[in-house]
Length: 180
Image 1 (tube, rainbow, N blue to C red):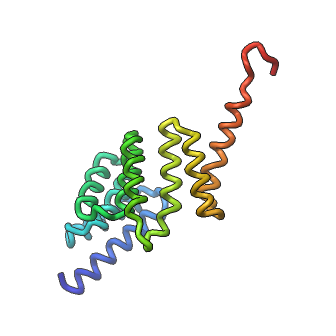
Image 2 (cartoon, rainbow, N blue to C red; image 1 turned 45 degrees about the vertical axis):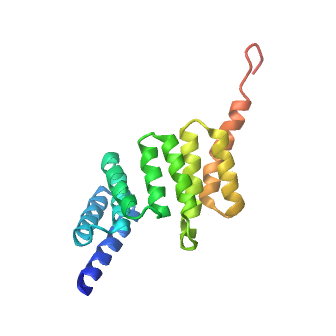
Image 3 (tube, rainbow, N blue to C red; image 1 turned 180 degrees about the horizontal axis):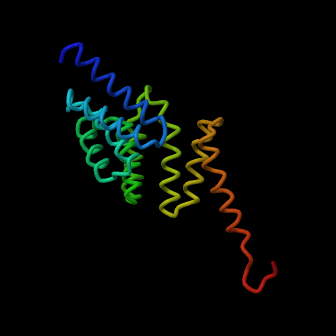
């Protein structure tokens, strides 16, 4: 691959990331999809491009296609923590919670020093999956562990407060025959 193709490939991925991060505008997501497709046309063996493709497809609500894309990404980069994180998120969207939680353990296992940016998200995603699986106490414990590591995390604090309130409401239910 020549220098021009490499620059074009990187530019496509960067634009796709920007469009994906811009919100939930369907036009932006479809444009991100086109950019990733173009990049994959240049370098179909690039695992990170497949991971990005899975994220775009997931944002577009195409869980089956997102799953296929992340499987390709993981086949090309089996030790990529972000790829395992994305696979866990897609499995969660498919309501395959036990598999998703197992996949998050793989993501934690494959973290490298350059993946520090991902750790906070892994805690949040794990708690969300546990909550979705009906395991609220474990979800709170995961968020508390995350907050010990990231005490200033607004994301983790935002995740834990509703779970704590729900637990208190559950404990304060009126007992049959009791007075309100």
